[in-house]
Image 1 (spheres, rainbow, N blue to C red):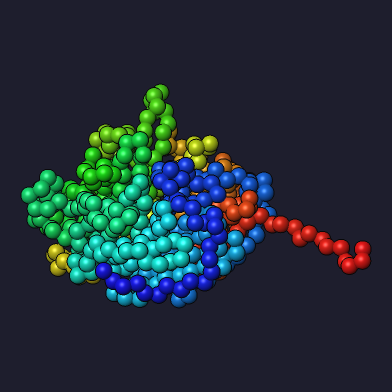
Image 2 (cartoon, rainbow, N blue to C red):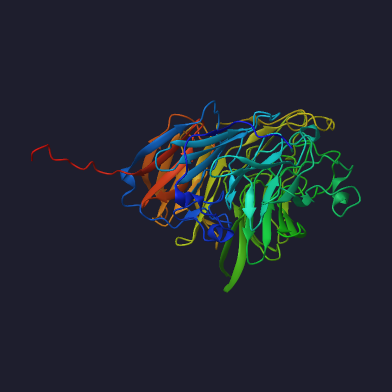
Length: 533
């Protein structure tokens, strides 16, 4: 265990901030507080706040900006509890006053052996959790930043790193690992929030001889299936839904014949034991780096006239999937994007109907979607009032190239010694889908250079907020997609927005490349009578 380093206490928290963040508080979903990455355990990313509406969104103004020292390409998803915001950067975490952006405390792990992007913290009880690039899970006292425990759960020497936001559920903290593009073996681990004891570990590439290992042809121990995005959770079923990454080598499949389980999949795991309840593989034997690292959104809605527990997954391979989340049964898949030519559709069992000749070649082969996928890890949102799923999509094709033979493991070959070459600029489009039909309700084309990685947040006020690919924070009407408001932040966006309230005032916040921005409704200045009047 590493010793505590880099804690700076600047001020005390308010008495209300000392209250315990209970599991039951997170279950309630987002309102004044935003307590987990997606706002709730279901991944809906929909807030009950409605002070900001489609009618008054044009009156939104900046409230404060906090510049993160030496930041470059922030991915952090802020959490907010009782007026305190928690944000992360590479190997560091900060507590801010959510009203003003004033720094309360900061902690930086100066001993970490790797700088990596960081997608945010988790919060439970009086603790806040985050990961370091060199695969440590760190628990801090959220009131002052003091280190309570640190736990190493992977090694850089094994091709691993950590970049995800941990997930706190009941008395556990769940984490995963990245590194699938250079050879590793992915897994999800559960730790005691109180002690840091590892409670279970579920590998995403079977060991040789285990069920599923026969799907790897010439068995590849370091087959990938990274777990660098946290999952969602159904409290009634006590099941975690965790997406997995691509197989390795990314663009060369010659020696890994078969489906390559459990890559590019959604795993349903028992929270208490890590036992796999079911899995669904979206892209068997992937050769285009179309991992499944996108948010599984849990919704309850009628299906063929009967109530059903569903999971929605907007997949990088270009299809929007609907599954039964109790059994994993495939129900339907519809196209997310227009530029999709590697498959003609999805069959009744959920397998893609392949178009021959679309695999990468040493001389290059064009395929759609491109390597970044039809969508990616940027957050979707679901509004239960409109019944619409909001997804940032990318219309783009790439030239995919492969090496002529299998590369060596644990080397950064960026996918087998070669990679995609963009053939066109591409375009990001925010789209609203009706999960009941798979149809598009509306779309909002973006006009920037197709370099965004920002997602969405939906509100009960009827507004969808998102970051576009030209440095703008944007608000649109949730029912129609009509533009309501925007603000130019002057730099790229690689994180998704949240919304919260303090002292009865609603804010919308997002991380830009180097800073945290918070917005709210304009408040007219109160006139003050001059002395003697």
